[in-house]
Length: 358
Figure 1 (tube, rainbow, N blue to C red):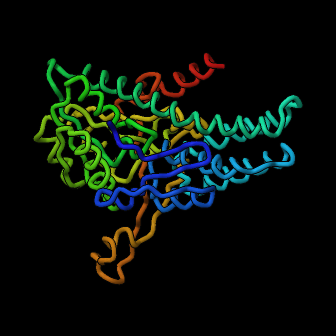
Figure 2 (figure 1 turned 180 degrees about the vertical axis):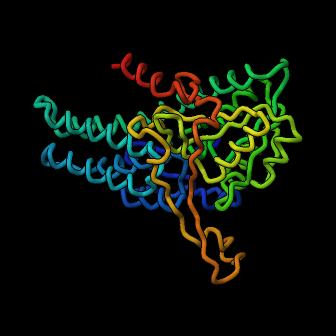
Figure 3 (figure 1 turned 90 degrees about the vertical axis):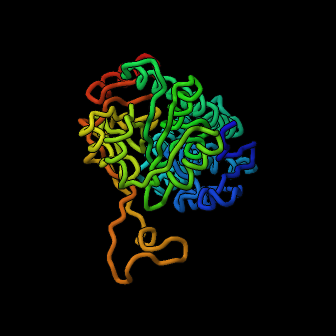
C-alpha cells in the first residue's frame, strides 16, 4: 500500500509533515485556510496536485461548521480565500485552476434562485472532496499511459531502467503519483529493472521523499546526486527519464523542480527519451510559452544551511529559484491521464478533448 500524505473526513484534515521525513512520520492538523496557506508555503505539503487538494480542502474544513446568512456572503468567502491560497506557491498552476473552477461554481450557484445557501455550501464541499478520488484515478491512468510509452521505445521485451527527479509520488498527490506512478506501473507489469532517483538539491525531495517511497514500496532503486546524471545516462543504459510538472505551457514548455532542465539537456545528448508526467490540471493553455511562467524564488537559507548547520561561507549571496523551465524541444512526450502527446500537438489535443467534454 502506498503512503498517504492527506487524511480527510468531513470537517477534519490532516497532512503528513514532509519536513520531518524520512526520520519522523507525523500528521499535523489543518483547521482552516490560514493553516492551509502555511503548510503549502512552508512546503510541509508539496507537489502541484497535493497543493491544490490541500488548499481547497482547507477551505472545506473551515466552512464545514459555519452557517452563512446569504449565498453572496458564502461566495465572497470562497472567492477571497481561494485566491489567497493561490499566493502560497504561485508557480504550481493546479491551485489556480482549482480555485477558478470552484469560484465559477460559486458564482453559478449564487445566480441559481432554486439553490439554497446550505445546498451551495454542500456543493462546494462535494467538489473539494471529489478532488481526492479523481486525482488517484488520474494518476493511475498517467501511470499506465507512461509505462506503455516507455516500453514502446525499447527494442527488446525486457525490464527497463528509468530515472526520475524530485518527488512525484503519493507524497506529492492524493496517492500513487504522476512520474512515480509511471515507475509504479512498470513495477506492477514486472518491467522495472531499476529506478534511479536524484537527491534534488537544495530541498532534497528525492533523497528524503522519493527514496522514502521507493524503500517503502520495496522497489529496486538507487539514489544518485544531481551532478551524477550525465555519468549515469552514459553508463547505465537508462531507457527513459520521467519527471513531473508544476505547470505546462501551451507550447509544451514545462516548469518543474530546479534541475529538471539540465537533466533534459543531458538526456537529449545521450539520446534518452525525456517524458513529463502531469494531469490536465497542470497544463495551462492560457500561457503561450514557458517565458510567461512565474518562477518562485526561495530563501537563501535553503542553500546555506542543512538544518541548523551552516554549510556555506558566511557572507556569500545566493540565487535559489525553486523551479526551472524545460523547453518543449527537449521533451519527448507529455504523459496525461488521457494520453501521451508530443509538445507540438499539446494545445490541439487538449483543446479538442475539452470541447468533447462540454
